[in-house]
Image (tube, rainbow, N blue to C red; front, side, top):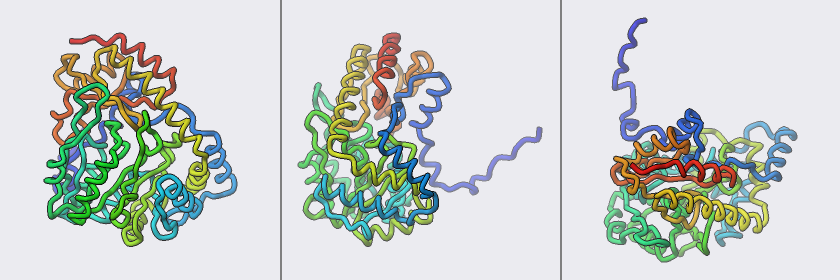
Amino acid sequence: MAQVPALPKHYLSDKVEHFTESVIREMTRQAMQYGAINLAQGFPDFSAPAEIKRAAQQAIAEDVNQYAITWGAKNLRNAIARQMQEWQGIHVDPEKEIVVCCGSTEAMIATLLAVCNKGDEVVVFEPFYENYGPDSILSGAKPRFVSLRPPQAAGGEWTFDEQELREAFQHHTKAIILNTPNNPTGKVFSRKELELIRDLCVEYNVLAITDEIYEHILYDGAAHISIARLEGMRERTITINGLSKSYSVTGWRVGWAVAPSAITNAIRKVHDFLTVGAPAPLQEAGAAALGLPATYYRDLADKYRARRDHLIPALERTGFRCYRPQGAYYVMTDISGFGYKNDIEFAGYLVREIGIACVPGSSFYKHPKDGSQQVRFAFCKRPETLDEASQRLEKLTRT
């Protein structure tokens, strides 16, 4: 067989040299390869609500199968505006201030491409959801990371240093990405923290890009506050959200960005040439989903709290130090008690020998060493799945 010549370096963009493929999705592939329980990727292994599945089926049966309006079906945009008014008291014009995308993932990259220029900087709290760094780079900007520090005592919260955050806001800062409730830490940013971020955004004329995909998954009295609610922030905030997490439909890929009309127009242009539009029948089902009663969201949070309180004790009995989340459906853990060289080695052992997939903590940090003794577990699984995971964890031994 003829040897394939090496690909000339100039064929590829320099941008792709600055990040890897998704570690989270790689761990899902390894879970499938080794027959492991997938506590790595954040998708439920239980059914979506029957009423929204029926709404999707009905839309398909009624031939809602062609392109929707590029920036989103009217029914869905109206539902998004209505829910933001009801839950956060934010008035949104559904005709001018919403763009529906192929998931919140596309909404984030479309937003960054629409607002960033080469040389801009984007402030990102770390550990961070792994898309934010690459998204910043692809948009031509440079991510500037600010540390979230893990709790020092049981029941504590992840915190950041005010001075470090202030120093991150420089003359080239275009935006800050704020994910609350946070993936991977489970941190829910307090009003006081949000007001500090607001003050810096106003002082330096910086945009806030908020990922609020876990807004309804909250525990122990935590409250979600959209920073767009705060005085001075409505005109400088892009709020990103989607169907995936609140309605257990991560494969539907329906998300959105809400922003002042001038910013929305720019995002719509980028979105149009990225994907044209999100799936039309699933947008109609999304409108039905956003019409579910408040009891649905209380029940959702209660069930996830029970799952959290199911998995964490099993992890702690085994030797993990767990950082108890206030929101979202992940738990970050410290693995230093096991004596492994790093998180990659430990995660490989766990998926191959124990039959449980997790995410190495280093994938959430700019410098891998900062997360080298952490791993993340997702608990958005059936109780039976968590029972089986607990049993498998009993086989875990310390080196």
